[in-house]
Image (cartoon, rainbow, N blue to C red; front, side):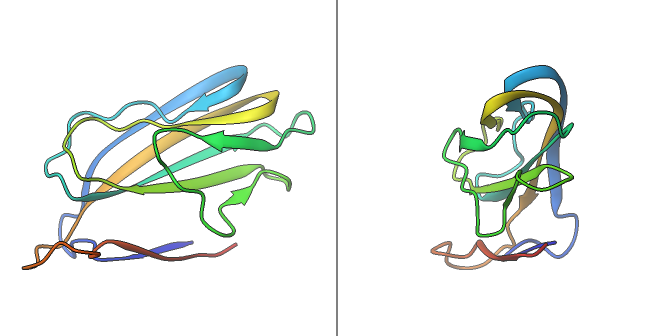
Length: 129
């Protein structure tokens, strides 16, 4: 469960992408099409097949792994990261792992609600197990 503040309340979902990765140490989310607006909240997620004793090394493109976002050490293996955007270009992130695994990655971007000031308006409130 992931909770964020400042997301539009109607027609919030904008774009997404997904990939399936055959055994590798990097798992991509895939790259989205261009975004409808510059201020969006994107969530990337990865899952692995459970092979090996893999652990997460990093995620790319300024995505942030929140507290409880890294569940790669338990079964099912999963990872969540997010990014608040300020541009309309397509979005992608990769998770780099210590060992090779097969898995999937996805990213979804959500429009921010319209407000008078944009300072600090998109915020991740929490991630639960």
